Length: 216
Image (cartoon, rainbow, N blue to C red):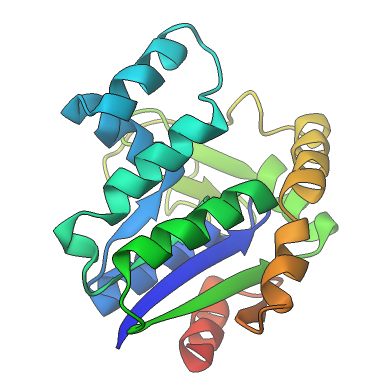
């Protein structure tokens, strides 16, 4: 049976790390919103061209365009055996649009599971303010939870590790409030459909991953 996974989780919940690990282990595509947008723009798809016009102006891409790009992506053949969605849907409206898309591509032979990585706000903020990114390759570290072998130096490429301007406590709290308002209602939406699994995200990366594997 085809397995489709939707991952929910606040900023710094570790959702990106976990979805990439799972996608590799299951040999199915990891599909994140940013990656979808960049691919659609690079491929020059109908929705990609429209998205580019907004991105070039520094504007948010409208929800209906994002939904169109998701539809294009999920119709590709590499999704025939399943996929993992990371960062979509972000609202009830998008979740309802996704249900329609899944109805188009599935023939009653797919199982959809929603994984919510539930992490306390204190832990999320601590992760965000201690996060460091490599200027060259983009690798992510955390000076408290996942430090580089040599302080300030990327293990992978030797690049300099820096703190992003938005990785501050004030910005973190603002992002978490936005998440609560826009995305947390999805937890009830999917729980009511009996397809949601809650995972304790206040633990080490490997412990979280083992829990995810046991629940899927």
